[in-house]
Length: 147
Image (tube, rainbow, N blue to C red; front, side, top):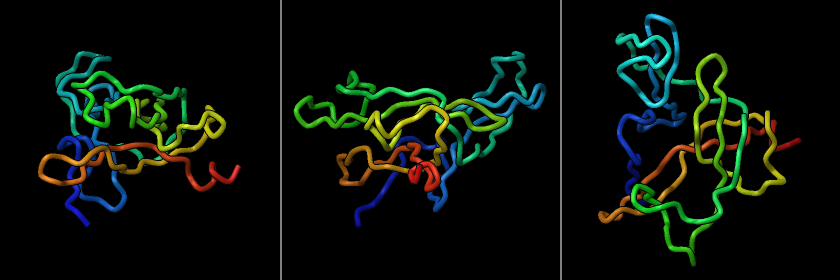
């Protein structure tokens, strides 16, 4: 197996068997943010701490990315001939924050607002050094997949 590297340091725990997104919590008003931020957009406070966010949440809304995003900044397959559409959604992490994320499902018949999702890592591309670059995504939980 080739080496695996994260798409960006500090976005999720790495390496980890059960990865978690890294966010911030305002110590003044308890607001949670993703990604990590130094100041709070809710109260303008400058006292935040890095926290591990929840691994599971519910799908708040979604769409399917049916064509390659503009590259850069997109770092995946941008060739219209080989690009594979992917789901994108907002996932609500209870008591914390809504996170915009890639989804592991791109079939509209398999996506439903309110379905339970869990954080996973997925391959994004192979870098110039031959390492597999991984990013975060949310996948239906076993319970959601059985419905």
